[in-house]
Image 1: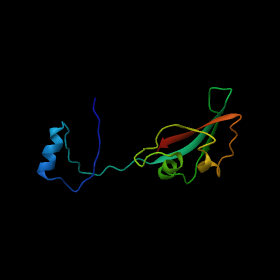
Image 2: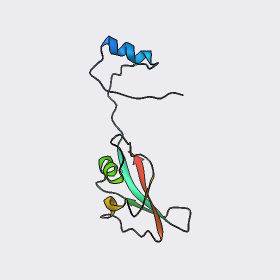
Image 3: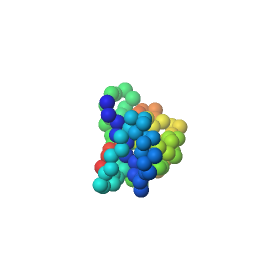
Image 4: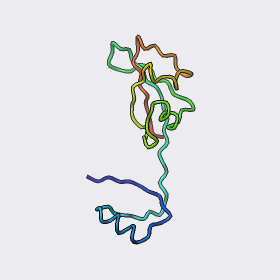
Amino acid sequence: YDYYMYISSAGFNSKVLDEIESFGLFIEELSHSINAPKYEFSVTSGRKDQEFFDNEYPLINITCDKIRSSLGFSNEHPCNHYYEITKSNCSIFEEQIDFNFDIYNYFLDCEEI
């Protein structure tokens, strides 16, 4: 399997390149920069007695940094998955959503734009 990791650098000296390649990694110079993906976030909800989601609430002014901080993720976390929203971690979203945890399950949804 291949795994691609992109690192932007002003350059490496030949000693560093040799050491990197000694680990079986390969350096490829790119002629363009790669921008980090951007995301739109929303909250989906579904009744606890059903298997599907029936509501979606777009989130305004929510960023990866805000989500990382609120949900306790590391600074490196990509924030590009589904996450369950519970009573204990919903405070960042309460200004935009009126939660009813007795009836609904809630999940943070992320869509790359």
